[in-house]
Image 1: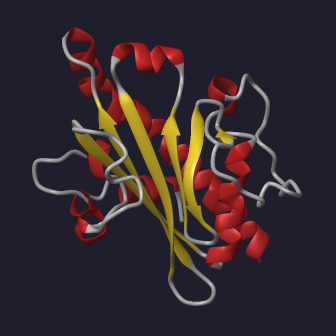
Image 2 (image 1 turned 135 degrees about the vertical axis):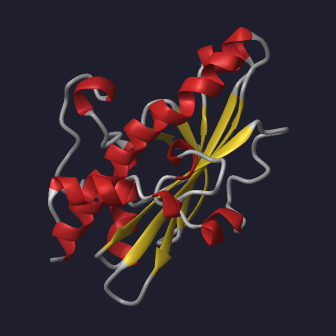
Length: 196
């Protein structure tokens, strides 16, 4: 698929609700947004939910194994969120051994998981807690036959009150879209290459 065709598919308006921007629903379907996610209920009084989704031509087990790599690297724009170090392009042995409480992507704690199905994390850090913000994320792997899967992500966020909250409400959906889109497309590429 050419770069222009990929961008057209990425910004497909049929993939978002009327009144909700692509920054809130990128790649997800109405049915996916209506389902229950493991992160639901982890953020009291959430301000909003953001969704991201991508099709992956690899078995669910392969895709999930790549999600386990989030323990060591964010797989987004490495120059920005990984201090310039490239995220590993090969699976790191042992990272599939998950345990609640493990750190993922530097600022998240693993709070729930089901092998080959989902990882659910909560953002931790003094800066986030000081603002009164909370953020929980579920990465859900949905098998689509033996050789493909869908990766659907839900972020549940509570913004702080006042000007900081207004700014976060305006910028977080778009900033997260840029970073998570890159993350999901990178994981997709690596899982598909590993399944080939």
